[in-house]
Image (cartoon, rainbow over all chains, first blue to last red):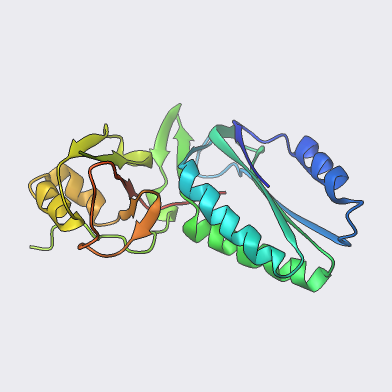
Length: 148
Length: 73
């Protein structure tokens, strides 16, 4: 299940709703990861652009992978502005086996950082500044650059 | 004509181009010095699938997307 929310995530509501959704499905382990925007480097918060078509296909591929291990993934991400000390990203794995879920949440979040088509900006003095130094190039980057 | 969209921070309006493959798009962008900085770090998707080959064929109703480096979460 993939959710995109405008602005900060209401983490308490999302986690509570997911818990209610999965608690009677006999999974045994529910392991959420919650990303919270830190107050650092003079930013007021972060802002995000998302390209939904590729995000959805990336997530669906991960969901199929999870199914092969009898697990399920849940993810929520913000679009637009997210102020300091609020949440922009929540993901969770549910699984009958704790070890499977712990490994999967780590692998999933790592690949999310490297592959999900989401662009991050720092909010500084009300302006959005692309966080290019913290961003990662996708596979095949540079294909169209002039190599002359 | 195929549509080219510039995603995230590139901040450019979409354009339409009459091309048969990505090598021709590379040629079109050759003289665009402002865009070259982005092209060196952008991935390319055709109809929402990332591609890595300049000989990828392009049809008139295709969508080409340029994706700068990402950072979710």
